[in-house]
Image 1 (cartoon, rainbow, N blue to C red):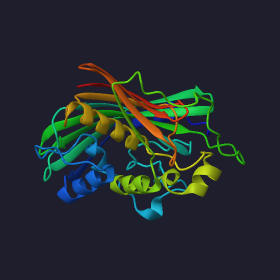
Image 2 (image 1 turned 30 degrees about the horizontal axis):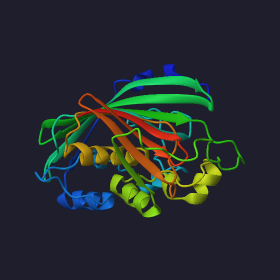
Image 3 (image 1 turned 90 degrees about the horizontal axis):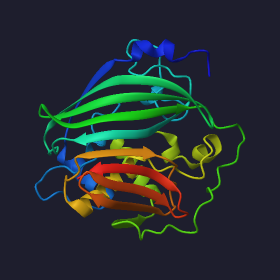
Length: 288
């Protein structure tokens, strides 16, 4: 990492950005098809669809080696040029205030809330907290704070990480609801298309294993969060979640079993995603 520190990035804190979009009925239909689910009976849009709206639209020529837009040190750049190449969506705190509906005009107001540098077990980390407000036809529908982490590159020549040690198998008996699935390449491809996500760890196997050191293609963090919200919908009903906080703890790998679980009710709902070996992939809490 260069000599730049968070002190060099203070000018970005408080920086704002506004994007506009439309809740296109055809796009909602494709999202529902991707998740193999039906639309809510009241005609609204299911929770988590807001992650498919107001997307970045960087030209292909401006993408870096990892598939993300190259971060530039300019007045037009929303986030600072943090000199750490590996970028991941680490966590979110989400409030659902009103359902979105097909046909609505959408506006998302974003603000850089904080930038923090830390020392982790794998090297230096920089966390950027970004606050978003998503409005449908002028009414606030979703309020969210995202935590984005920037990390140092994987060691050159390092072999792909093996599965971490864990239990022989995941036991869902302590949970109120359980769904098991195996995320396949088609699911990752469709979700990348829906969210205009060109990060190569989700579709380029040689890059994911040889350049970033993963065991295989990586399941998108917001896709795992979307699947947890889908589990909550199956358990509590459409658009029942009022608050949803999640944190990624370990990468979910394409082609490996993923266990989605839920327990509790009211303001004390716990959710989780686990690998077949018992390793936790995502921890989440909710109020329903």
